[in-house]
Image (cartoon, rainbow, N blue to C red):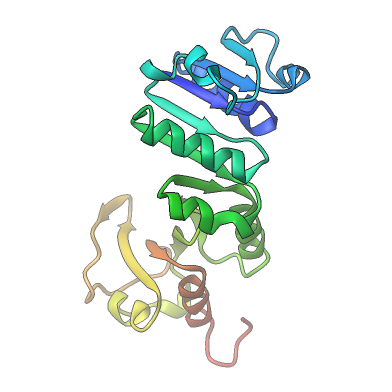
Length: 220
């Protein structure tokens, strides 16, 4: 796959190197030549020192035969415009843009772009880790609004039914493991301590389950 990465800060350089390790063909564009120092000296992709929105730059980068483009500068305006151009003008099949300032997220959404907000996602993950440890996130969707959590069933949940535990919460049970065997959990499945339950939930949903994991009057 041929991919263009716009922006060679820490995120862009790491992305370019990850793609190269998977043997994709990568071109990195940045208007500041010194930014390419973020790339590993052994990296052998192509670099272009120019403003991505300047006339002819994306053409020079080979955008007409690119299968993917990632706009990951620290300018939300640049990311949105470059992403929009790549998708609408050049019909690049897979375009992803970085959201740097969460206040600009609605702009990216208005363009209908695939967007990753590292700031919003990172803040939410830190907030989550400051809460009780029950429920380890193993997968994050979007910018962390919904995640899949792994819960080891506590003693207090012995004999409880899966359907009763998630009822009224922003959580859905998606997998269940007992003695190394996994299956799709049914609402009437009765839990035992040390069972492993995977739930898809919002932060509010996992917090509700954490509350239910504590015995009445016990610590939360």
